[in-house]
Every structure is written in C-alpha cells, then in structure tokens.
Length: 272
Image (cartoon, rainbow, N blue to C red):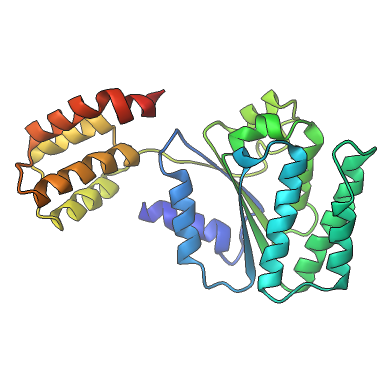
C-alpha cells in the first residue's frame, strides 16, 4: 500500500492539505488500517490535532456533536491549551439538548468558537470519521451534512481537514439521509481496492520471512480464494505461518484445506 500511503499522507499532512477527503471501499478492504498507518507515519506533526470518531458508535446526532467537542477538548487540554473563553463555549454546549428549541443554531456558534480559538493557536484539525455509512441515521437532517462541509471547506480553509471513511459513496449516504449531496464533488474521493501487483509481491516477500516460499500454484490458489483482499490474505497467512511453526507441510493443497475449513465461518461472514 506504499503508493496509497504516500497519496493520503500528502492530502492529509502535506504542505497544502485538502479540506476534505472521502475514502471508499468494500468491507474489510483495509480503509481504517490504511488511515491509521498514515497517522502513525505523521505522528510527529505538533501543529495537527487528530480527532478520530466512529460514527457507528453515536446513537443520534446530539451524541455525534458532543463526542466531537469532547475529543477536541481532550486534544486541546493535552496541548495545554484550554482557557476561559473555551470553557465558556463548552458550558454553553453542555446546557443544550436535542429537544431544545433551535438546538442546531444554539449549538453551532459555541462549536465554531472553540474551533476558531484552536486555529488562533496555530493548530490544524484533522477530523477522521470512520464508519460514515452510519450517518444515514445518525445525521438525520440535511443541515448537519452542510455544517460538516462548512467547518471543513468554508470557515477557514487549510485549517481543517475532514476524512470520511465508508463503504458507500458519500452521495448515496447523503441521499438516503435526506441530504442534498453537498459533499459529492466537493471532497475528493479515494477508492480503495484489493492489493495490486506490488502489494502482492510484498505480501509474498513477507511470507519468506517465515520460511514460506509460495510457488506459482500456491500463489494462484491464494489469489483465487482471496481476490487480493487484505483481510482474507492475512487470515490465510496466519494459518500458513502457524503450520510452518508446527513443522507441517505448506503448499497449494494446504491452502485448499484452509479454504474448505474456513468457508462456513470467516469467509462467508466476510461476504455477507
């Protein structure tokens, strides 16, 4: 995944980072793992506040925005940045509930105040929203999609980057949530596929570290069963490494045995 890591690193941490990015790919293709690796490789950038959220963990839109504020506050406190004005804005948010009249408008301004103070300290916010497919029911209202776009691309460009990680394209998610497709065509889309030839060469090279040297037939079986999908390849690799450590035979026939045994478990679950 070296080429993908470099591209994402430039978009998220480069000299001119993008305001938003949509990472799309099928189940367990490695989207979250790839982003996590990018964050590890660029962990030394002191001027970037990384806020990571799993949208699927939010029961409703109120919890979504409160989680964002809590994560932002924790990151600022860790930097030693939390003053009276930030505390005042935070207190205003704590007094709100989703049932309050004009809740959205009363929530909006204190949150913008907190972000503005963050930017005044020379910090850039990198907001990673994993499992964004859950926004279909969590962000139940078009204004919330528009607000995320406003935070990322219109308030203060280059001081905030929002990364959306999902299985479905953002336009499809917004449409099913009664959104207005305000992200589609605004945030560049990065589609993640299975391993390419270079990735597969590195995968097989890693297997040689465990004294496993796949021949042409074994490689063909692995790629036939796994479709170059990282999760499935890793599942087979773990079993093959265990076999080698136990001094068992590792060949194409063994790959067939693993497939037959795991078909009604992990493999069927993966394709559901």
